[in-house]
Image (cartoon, rainbow, N blue to C red):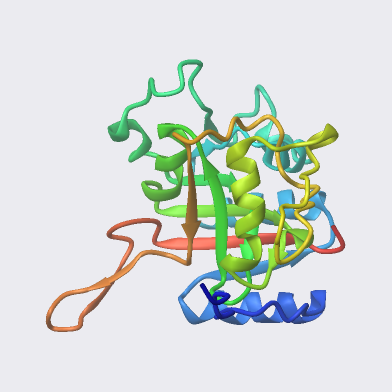
Length: 234
């Protein structure tokens, strides 16, 4: 058989080019990108956004990048009265969709960012993880600049290796045979048990739908507002 044609070639864009492409792509579908210079700044921006939108009940994903970010502000620490926080249950699927639907906002962590579509690739291994992406009307995604990839084919080898569990020490990923680029994401969370029964969700902006009369409605099948916070320089 002849070699398969390269439909999405990897162009090895620079980091500034990836950032500009991602921001423009996400803006085109109604999402927002906020670039910060530290996780401390991200935490402050998330706090300010939730206060501005009068969000009180917050679902928080059990992700390393989320925990490392929110620790910088008092409002997300134990005993703080600012927000009512909801975390993943001890039993993975012991969660009620009706309860998650009452949340005002969610804070989740990305695994990768796809520049060509402005998408966040999110590891969603439990029902709680998945519903945080869909049900709260406001979704805040925490990511780092080094999570950026040009498109899905460029990151596919890394996703496959996560599913297969082919990891080396400290969560670094072994390069796949024939991979489009070395599969070395320092932000892969080794505490997330990626399995064949798990999922990766590709989140592209807020939910948008229209009926036969072409009347656009936001937030029917997912969040009404989606903001991706990107930590630059990491």
